[in-house]
View 1 (cartoon, rainbow, N blue to C red):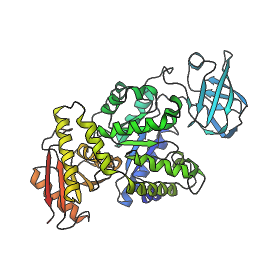
View 2: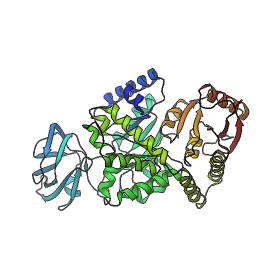
View 3: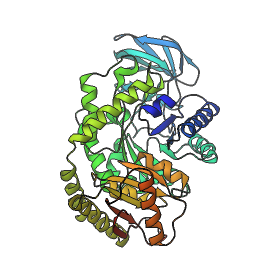
View 4: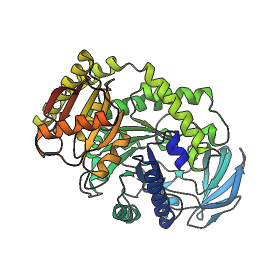
Length: 455
């Protein structure tokens, strides 16, 4: 864990689909301790299983041969070489002959050839290695399960008790799914990350983004729901719409998959990570590469290096103008319009005046996320007295979380933020900085901008 933090990990994702709650809570505690010992702010994301349909556990890895046959049966238990239990009671009613089912991240594809009353006979169209308890994709419009599940809420309650920073909601289909979680807004509650992995989620995207704190482009199941040729374009559109609305966007699935075993990625994988950066993503995510990979810290360092190099080629000016055009063309509430105008003014002032840093003062992190939309080339320093907000800001593009003891009158707060920036070496005497924040206690409005020369 310490090696991954040193290599560039900002947020650690705990996949609650695997292992027990007790094991996940123990990993959570170890991550917190590792971050304390390294004096680093590390966000922790609890990824809820959702209505994920899974195969029975494989006692040992099984290489499934193309052209072989097997049977899927509703139920729990261990998978054998030819019979795979499926954790979905109405499997025989909801899956039809002729359906193609993908397993895991899509590397294994099954063709349903018969329903014999006890199970579904399948032919393996594309084989591969199966291990652990992989998911099997059933089209979301057939699933009778709802999001979040009762098990999701049970797991979430346990992690809220220990202070989780973010929670990812799986198989979201509408904004109503997000609202059903019923948590207090951040920072009193964790930041909710909606995973976009169904066709319905794409169709209801703007509502889901508005109801969420962040969005994840979960390309594994999304690629199974939509045609593969559409996936790159969906990725770009989801990211652009998410960032325009001031939410962080995460790009996930198979980014450096070959590094589960290999010491370096393929050329295509390196391009995939860089292109996600060019698409405007806030964060890129690793999964199996660090969960079961042979050298997790090396994978993190490799991804960080590719992302850092891509940042150097990013079209900052073109991106900011596109966000400006998108936002000004949409109807806005008064608070949203004020925030848009103030953050646009900050972005322009930072570019034209050579501002060294943008100091954002915020309890919720809203101001940081609002200015980060424009991808300013000046440093973004996010000042907050809230410990959970500090850790949530680790997922925001370009943001360095900074603790400030309190937020009171604007002049005193600005002076403290400037002094802390100087003391931590982020700016130097004589530098011009922009200080951005809200003058009221209302979360969701940024209405104050000061240009300050550091003493």
